Image (tube, rainbow, N blue to C red; front, side, top):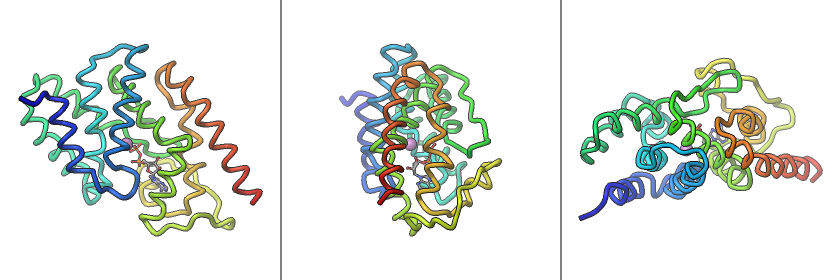
Length: 210
Ligand code: ADP
Ligand code: NI
């Protein structure tokens, strides 16, 4: 008999295996492993953290034709098959519904320790070398320019504004990636973000120099 986590792994591989914009199975895997690292020092319910980390992108509006409610129904349908305790299922759904970055000036508070950990792990995977790779992968997938020196970054005051922005990929560093270091919830993630942040700044220096 397969355990719950094995079932979740199979499902996420099946659903996100070929996703081409940086939200593939290996992103889910890294978020899971980073969450486990954070849990060791920060605590929290390991089962909720693992399931939420693995499934956090299943409900993402971007991967559900722009429809977040449809995404949450899809996640909920799958979680119901696992026969989790009701409050655990609700907790995983709450994390999926609230963790996304929504713009430089839009707060995205997480109300539980488990949510804080999974959000930090997702954000650590958005920065550093992997974050750089994912960002250009997303840009290519959506036919965005790598860089246009004539188009400065924007500061988004609403999720609506942030979502409809179609700027070049270098702007995404200023509109999200370089902001994430100061948005980490847990001490462990704050420390882990330092090196990844430093590396992105060096990357940008080299990019402009070339
Ligand atoms: P979250 O995980 O907070 O919901 P997203 O799913 O919107 O964040 O973004 C995850 C990653 O996808 C980003 O960190 C980035 O690598 C890439 N991405 C999302 N939007 C853009 C964009 N407009 N330009 C370039 N990359 C993007
Ligand atoms: Ni993610």
